[in-house]
Image 1 (tube, protein in one colour):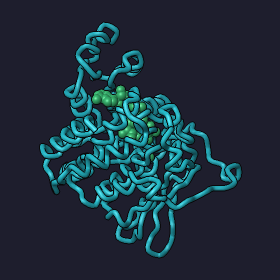
Image 2 (cartoon, helix red, strand yellow):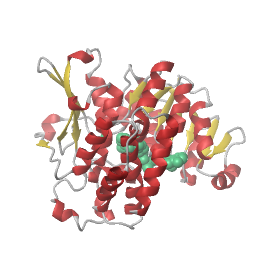
Image 3 (cartoon, helix red, strand yellow):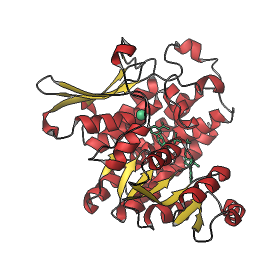
Image 4 (cartoon, protein in one colour):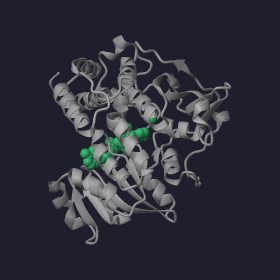
Amino acid sequence: MRKIAVIGSTGSIGTQTLDVVMQHPEQFVIEGLAAGSNIDMFVQQVNAFRPKKASIGSKQLAEQVAPLLPADVELYYGEQGLIEVAAGTDADFVLSAIVGSAGLPPTLAAIAEGKTIGIANKETLVTAGHIVTELAKQKGVKLVPVDSEHSAIFQCLNGENLNEVDHITLTASGGAFRDLTRAQLQNVTLEDALKHPNWSMGAKLTIDSATMVNKGLEVIEAHWLFDLPYDKIKVLLHPESIIHSFVEYRDGSIIAQLGTPDMRVPIQYAMTYPARLASASKRLSLAEVGKLHFREMDEERFPCLRLAYECGKIGGTATTVFNAANEVAVARFMSRAIPFMQIETIIEEVLSKHIPVAKADLETIQAADRWARETAALL
Ligand code: NAD
Ligand code: MG
């Protein structure tokens, strides 16, 4: 039986992870659960799965839920609680599914304990990819991708030699606004941005898909997961999200991974890798789909993607700042403080004020993250 801890258990990835666990009760047991503020769902999950350790966002919430939980569950809260759940149980696999760079400390703590990481929280790799991958290498820890594009690439690389890869291509659905011009983007609302055509995901990621920041974060994530230079990572618009991504080898052969858009498939694969289990997810019928479409990415239409490549190539704190500025800009858009188009302006302005530090240590990374947040909040 695989022992699992889930960081971010009440979110889109977290709940789908627990779905997979329920489908295969003979394969998985839950050792730890951590969530932010959805206390009703948290209480229900802790009672259903009875982890050894559980953690909620704050002390106040912990006091509220404590009487509703089984007495033998150890309850924690806050950042220390996340670390306790990620690193302090017998779990051998930690699914990192909180949102934002808050995922960095618990992920590093879990790696330090030698636990395999299912990495959904891409912001962790964007914030401090060099530190995370270096520690993983040192500890002999595998980072198994959960993001659908990266799971696809991971599968397409199985048994192949990385030196023979010509390039990889991440597909992009284009998000809620893929067919709008920049002029039409001026008047879009929060409600419009939250309507993703193919995937049902957390709010922050849905906004990131509409700005194309998400694909930028994914390019940087791919750089760290697959140890590939940025000129070997391409992006292609593919509105149907059926081809999840593909690898082209030096002989011109292309290997792709396909399926219906359902995150439970890559989540389960990360949890069972290298084995595969049956899945209740809807099967893909290419005959039913009939046609697939592809378009070149337009960097002028989606400037955040260009910015992400630029930051990725600079490295160090540049990607940290790109991510932190975006997190704040998206939060402000979600609270209706700024219009949609200001998200990219804020990212660009914060980056223009930043002098990147190459090979930054953790302290420098965390200082850059804080500085970018403070700066983005004032623009
Ligand atoms: P979500 O907003 O639905 O869920 C986030 C979860 O993290 C919730 O349980 C929330 O309570 C918890 N959380 C957030 N901040 C916290 C904090 N500081 N302390 C404790 N708990 C906290 O987000 P999601 O869509 O599930 O995405 C999670 C991560 O997975 C993101 O990094 C996202 O980019 C990535 N991802 C998601 C999908 C998807 O389909 N949803 C696909 C690929 C990658
Ligand atoms: Mg993705």
